[in-house]
Amino acid sequence: MNYERSITSETLENFDSDTEVVDSRAPKSRRRLIVGGALLLVLAIIIAAYFMMRGGEAGSAPAADDASQAPTVSVIAPGQATIEGTITATGTIAARREMPVGVVGEGGRVVSVPVEQGQWVRAGQVLASIDRSVQSQQAVAQAAQVEVARADAMLAQSNLDRALQLVERGFISTADIDRLTATRDAAQARVNVAEAQYNELLARNARLNIVAPEAGLLLERNVEPGQTVSAGSGTLFRIAKGGEMELLARVGEAELTKLSLGVSAEVVPVGTSDTFTGQVWQLAPTINPQDRQGVARIALSYAEGLRPGGFATATINSGTVVAPMLPESAVLSDADGSYVYIIDAENKAQRRAVTTGLVTNDGLAITEGLDGSEKVVLRAGGFLTAGETVNPRLEGETEG
Image 1 (tube, helix red, strand yellow):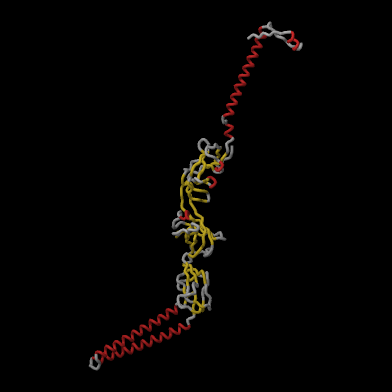
Image 2 (image 1 turned 90 degrees about the horizontal axis):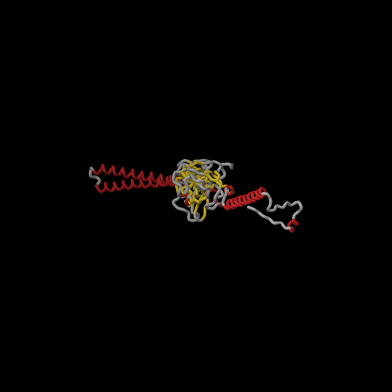
């Protein structure tokens, strides 16, 4: 390329005296240098434009640096576990078979009460005695009546025997024999009546002693010597048959269906650290409509720490299940039900509906929705959205 330049006198005035002027008559080698410099300048401009275009494209697409800006979440792979389910319930301790004891006779004035509450009593043991001075005299009188009737019967029998000897000789008619026989039978009947009345009095007198119907632990004593009692006096003693106790545990309607007879339970009375082992022996056939709860009756052997009327907490074994188990922080819920967030192969959070089962101290059993191999978001699931890219880190791992 040839460049020609005309220089006028006016142009020369604008140049310094040191400025070199190249005219068309410059040597060819000098012109080649100028042309080469221009080419290099154009090439530099093209290269700069190319890198500027590459820089714009790189800014419009996610780069590796963008991935580093994704939120880091802790995840857990729960696997499968054999979970022992438990149900915690509270209730009141009571005697399993409580026997109220009162007056069974006509009553009277109490003369002695030889037992105290908290003692063990045996079947038939006297708990209280009622004055029987009048009844004893009545029994003596009736015993005398029995002897009178027996004497009359013996006399009637002797008269009949003598008449039978005389009838063979013709001195006594058959009609007389029949009359004497009837007299003897009537006398014997009066003996039987007198004896029955006497035995009745003895039985009534025996009922003046209030006795224990069964062996067990005496829970209450509500009578004192000198007190007048009768059949309307109510319960004077309460006995726990065999000393057996139970906990009347209040269990929710849904949890009650998970229990079965014979399952074990650990009972801890309030105010103590002692644990007593029992088992469920009866489940309530009805549900309280007010609080939607039923009663699980837990049988307990006698122990000094078990006091009827006391409050206790029971941990009942509700069975075992093989399933994934998650901490409560991983399981979320909304109007559509329970769900978790799992992380897929592209490190994106995906919502997964689940069904929870047994509740344990270590978390919740997941009966449906997971097989245990997934990466489940452990915490902060409530801040994620489906499809969001995250940086998962297994629980327990340290950041590299």
